[in-house]
Image 1 (tube, rainbow, N blue to C red):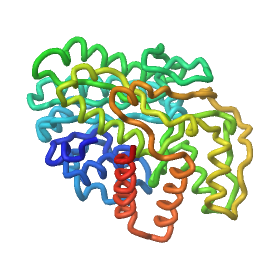
Image 2 (image 1 turned 60 degrees about the vertical axis):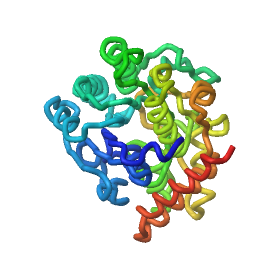
Image 3 (image 1 turned 45 degrees about the vertical axis):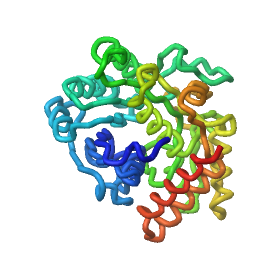
Length: 358
């Protein structure tokens, strides 16, 4: 990743008040970009956006993906050169409770954003973030490739598969990468991310960290479920690399879908992650099984990121146990009222140093 590329670049980040959006906004700030954010209020209290003072370096625009007029106004205000679309309903179980909201936000919200971006004359690249769950899950032992079938048996997964199809349609109809001056549109699929400042509903790490602080056992729905765990900075480095290269001379050939998953070491069971965190934060009970009935979630899910490795030069840098150490470092500091903005920027700088290693 060429860090100089982002200096003074006008970047619109949707979902900048969320977990991944806040980390991305902080990283872009550290690179000298002119960052505009478009989102609803932070989804939780506490939240990373507030705790790390993300608003200090962002033109903070509030609005809903359901409102095309607000989207058009945000695009007109920011005149973006690069757009990262992260705003989403991102929870599987919430998708079961509110399926129409999930499709409205993830599918139609993506379409409205792309429609609002069509007249944007200075736009060079659009990166739409979806999920590893957009694949038709067959519980394979090997990782899914970008050419595998899209699908989803739950509303969240299906809504993200819909977003992928919408992006493909807009690319073919309006953002043809072969046409001179046309923005390059790509989608990015990542797995389960970890990092400081995640207080999301129904997510393993927030539930576990709260249990650790309260010295009680955490309840696990699926302790043997395998997920492609990675620190949040791993896929974000992929998004930044992709966004940069879409703007380059070879960008037309990169306007497609991309996986950003961990090495084989990152595909671990929920139980493994819980046990590892307990070793880093000792003194609390481990876990108990949650025997209550729950809606279906995939049991085995991995990504194949060969395309990103070979064509973008991207690869994971943090081993999972190191990523978990960074999470504990962040939350221990937050628990005593420390400056987590500076720690977040320091972790970004630390990670950026790893990018220079071969």
